[in-house]
Length: 303
Image 1 (cartoon, rainbow, N blue to C red):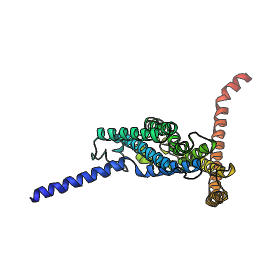
Image 2: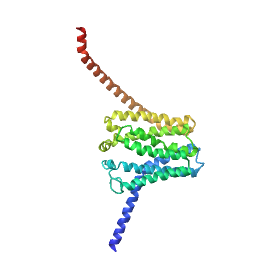
Image 3: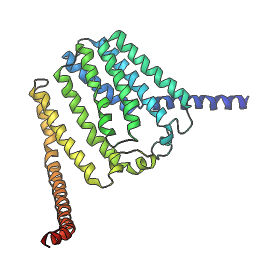
Image 4: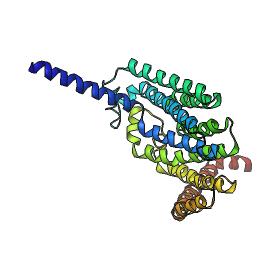
């Protein structure tokens, strides 16, 4: 009797762990960002929330597709996840969930999400959701081992959700939707470059060609962060300039970004000053070496 109860408890505990393992496969933190961005795109496209059921099905379909793409990302990267300290305890490297189960789980979620969007929303939103999953799983994920530009490539599917929300509300894509895309696209660069810098040793161990791994000196990563931060400030003001938002949004953006401008500007001057100094040094060395190499030719010409 005691042993039966004991094994029943163990089984329930294992099922509970497996359930939360499947939840972890969906990357809930990323899904939250995707759903918020999709909802914002829908809000701007609909001029509010005049069609709540369409919004519901949009978020349901986008959430399912996003969860499936995340699960397939876990499946593809299960071997390298086992090499990194921050990912070795994920459901697949730890053995909690079998790879084939994760594969079926991911594909089923993506297909379910695309079908929901196709039936209850519209074909354009369904296509954008499928495109997001395709770019994330089959382009960005393998590119992490090929080029440091993977962050820029990965920022494309990461910025599509507001396009999907807008398309769900309007059935088409307008200029305003692309402004939302650009804001989210530029924001991802300083965000993920900072993460890549913090975990650069882990990424190096796994063989990922992240920017701080390919260029260990911090200056190039620093340059990318500064460049995209200034771009983000510029794109964030555009909604007020084209009538997407009102004065409240504009002044909130100003109050948020004004404190950032002086330190970013000073860091930019420091960076470009250092870069100019390095360039002058290299140019000076090149000129000296050039004069040295040309010396025999000068003598032969004189003779």
